[in-house]
Image (cartoon, rainbow, N blue to C red; front, side, top):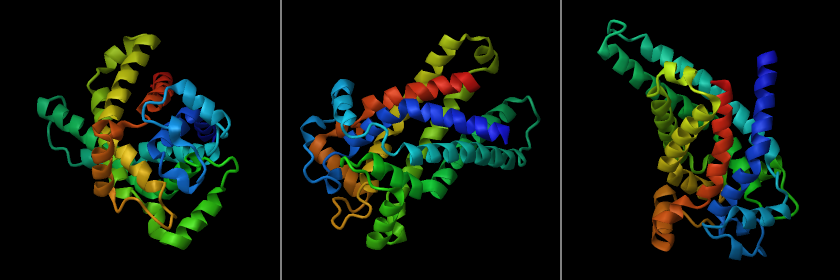
Length: 281
């Protein structure tokens, strides 16, 4: 019970620090689509390259911490279940290991098992809690000064789209989280435990920052597409038929950099994640 409370407290603290950046990221990723929440919103400052100061000025009048509650819930459940499923998958994969311990084949197999277990753990958790992710995304993408409650958003999506609506963007979301967890696990497992234990806090922070940002940059386009699909759940008229259609539309209208809308804010958000990894590892 104590460990659960500590984990929950750390999640609340970390999300409180990075939530404004997360909201800024989603506002950039979904601008032009979230007009369904606020028809009068002026998108002149919502280009993919809005500097943090300008975006912060926009957010100050739009409730900086909107959606914090459900996002904390999502982050806590994601962290807890991802680690749990990762350990379960790793135990399952290791149980079929036939190579003698200490051999090169055993080490390679163990390395691959850890990467696969991390990917499967992330994908399983995302599959279970995807509806919460959809509601959280819609709350943070809402420009109205008066927010919309989670339950009201959920009922609206079910009424218009049915239960399939809360799983909008699931396929691209599973692909993105699977690749992200795999790359991240590969990076951290490439560093020896002796180096990690002997390195100072500053060095560990920069190593963690490099690994997380690299993994994020590789998989960020998947996040942009899934956010655009999620924010349309519950709308009568949808701009995209699916992930492929969304990706093609972004590339045609904005080019490749259009897939990286809001990435600056994401990097600021990841700095908090790097700090938390350094503190707990």
